[in-house]
Image (cartoon, rainbow, N blue to C red; front, side, top):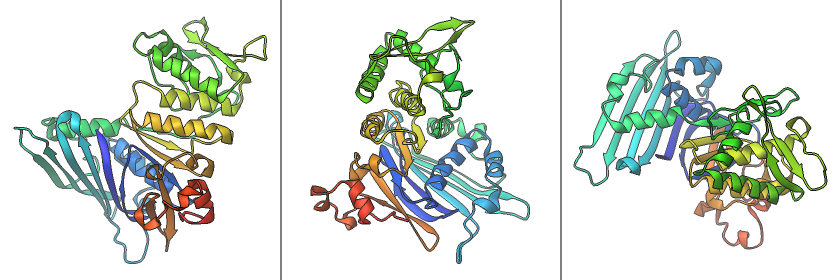
Length: 370
């Protein structure tokens, strides 16, 4: 399944936003422009799909804290998500979800799913439920389990992965021995990084992914030689980093923040079993600018296996991206605006003969400047 477009009305500064979604969508803009709010929308979908909608809204400060408070804006939140699932023969699917305030809290005012099958004898279908309680969102299984399409949508939403600043403090999981468990993903906080690397290395089916991780590390760190993943007892495993100029390996507690974060990102993006949608907030944190060209290539490569939505402040990262991979966010009269860098209205073709996207962003040609 792939998300094709998202429409948001009334969520914080996303007063009225419609954005086509590409396999790789990298958002850049100043602080407070709406990047984090945009990622939060997919977080709402994920938590709602697991029956935790009320919990996540409470964690965000309550309904009154997430609705737009602008002149001539209603207090209704509305989201429209368009997707396709060609593996299920569905070429278009539209999911609409709306919340409205009440004296105490809010209600789900509308939940509507419609889909169109591609060259199939099976009928098109739609499901609609009005004036339901806040626990409804994708949670009433007797309504959703009858058809594969809504069931798959709920599953995709529930498995969306959100990644941000991996903890690299002295006692963080990424610096300590970890349990050897059967996973292929390094975890949101790097808590299964060593197990994922070990499993990829030992797997006949996935060993090529491990080789690609080591190849990427060779490219990023010229002195790097190889990784060792010793078992340290009681089902625990650690990591030993070997490099040319040292006679002994470096262990996780000795590696730099940038090295650990890059290893975690590389393992995440080269995983053979990614979710359908991955959200990444500021992947450039702690990385040397020279690593960002490699990161851009990793993001593009991963977007063939998982749809990626990335928020960044780094002009050095977008320097290595194409216009159809970059969305510039501005804020006008308190409202966020989203513009793809390849929008014909920007007329960048001639500019890009002499400048990079980063240059044009700094010059103000793309907007999105504070």
